[in-house]
Amino acid sequence: MDVIELSPRLHLLRFPVGQAYLWRDGGELTLIDAGPAGSGAPIAEAVAALGRHPRDVRRIVLTHFHEDHAGGAGEFAALSGAEVLVHRLDAPFVRGDVPGPRPVFEEWERPLHEQAAKLLPEGDFARPPRLTEVSGGDVLDMGGGSRVVHVPGHTHGSIALHLPEHGVLFTGDTVAASPVDGTVMPGVFNLDRAQVLTACRLLAELDADVACFGHGAPVTSRAGRALRNAAHGCSAPVSAPPSRGPGPGRCPSRGR
Image (cartoon, rainbow, N blue to C red; front, side):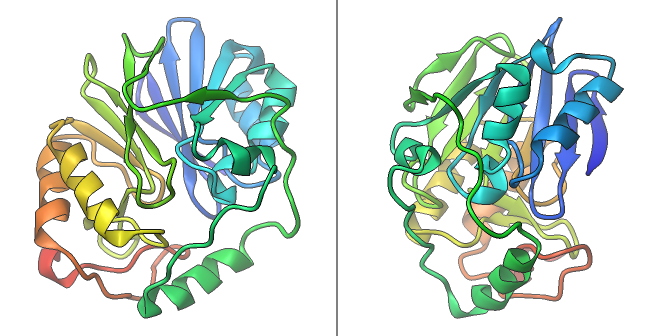
């Protein structure tokens, strides 16, 4: 796992598939997403390497239920005692009460998904001992007040987190950046692509300065412009060979 400092308050944790973020408020930490199964101990080691204790992580906010984001939540919650938060519509899938719905794949997405699946652990993952359910419009006690933005489409309960005081936006998988050239684009492997495009436009209107994606390099300045380009300039991206692991394809209309 790679640990990358984006700012003194914000670190990116990069896994073989997907990534998570660690946000600092004084002595308190928040983990946004938790990587795939097996990530609990590496996250704890990363926190320790930053001079903190896993118990300093007070909450884990899951942007959605997919295993590359929620798989490590139960493990790290057991190590840290952190509260695990997820949208109420995705909570049954994180708890393991019922299986989550599978994405409605575009044909060009299938080989990308097959590549990603090969890098994920087989079998089920440890479930969090308890969940706190959130809804759109809720404000979390982090980052001076972090607003939960409900952005259905990737999953029914997908959320973004907006920290207006800091100009930071965590998009989950609603938005992604291509591993080929960094192009910002709507996310892939969705339940409803039309909803994802609507959600991209909603997130662009927040005009964040920093945008942190579930896959691909974050945008660390003038992110609102990149999100507007993604929302309005691309409706049908095509696949391209990834340069660093599987990920979304390149959008030909927004190439750099």
